[in-house]
Image 1: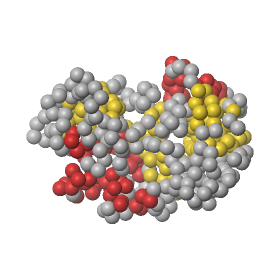
Image 2: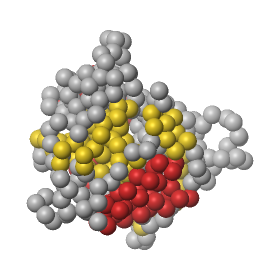
Image 3: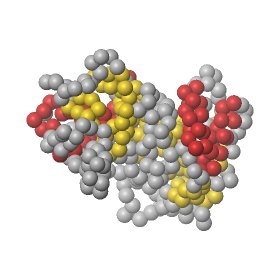
Image 4: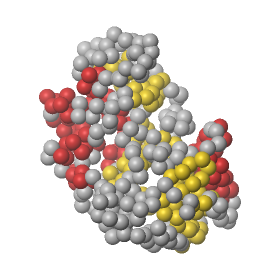
Length: 395
């Protein structure tokens, strides 16, 4: 494997000077050996015009490709600094462990060193963090990573069911209610066949099974009861069935064009075809359960999520507690890609649909505005795992 050193030629700028985030220049590419044609490319459902994917990038075999930073990082908002302190707290409380990601080897202490380097830089912007960027290969092995978005919705719910509010949100069944080792039921069995009825697992009732479905996809949400009480329902486990994308299903059935696919498009299709909701939603047998959590949304790392900085990852390729640099899609009001911008990211969450090196989910916040931003994101960018200079690559 040939490893290239690419320099990111940019200057630090403090927030409020010139612009809040820096463009790091146009030269961020990875040279690599060409791989055989059998290497995985992206799913056909992600082929659409102006999707941000770089088709000219060469393939490479390694999961990560090292690139030297000199010195360029985009200066973040105060929100990031709050999230960083949470990240430091998380790394200080988990046990020491080693990570081996293909040819890249490092430890939990390496991740903690990155947070300390970033923290030093935030306190003194003249300081140059001693970091190295490792670009992830993406599913297509050309460094193209799909960037989707998620948010925390606010749902109107009831404590007890009535004629309208009759669709339950469940906590996960456990022994002795559910026999240990027995497979949990599928989405169709739970939502349409009543597989969990009578087990006292209901946390709340909504007036829309479609809203429930999207809450499962988001992983958490704020619910407001009839008495005005608000609670956060957080990720409480899954049923163990494989995740299947409804967007992909509807594209393959020629129900929605690839270029027009979004969360809003799926919602509209389901609203226009109520008689087919069971058929389509049941194609995704994965089912998410909830737990009543704290007052702020938290991710899988049990950390409060930071809007526009927290991301959901596959921990087998990006460890929780990592800091990453992203070259992320910048969209116009209609959801069209107009550019990419560099952004620091905090790996603080995971999700059933986030598998492998080709996909991250970018947290947008709470409520209606975040819903729009999250629903539009489906484009490609690049992602670099930041590690201290002393990290080594196994030869």
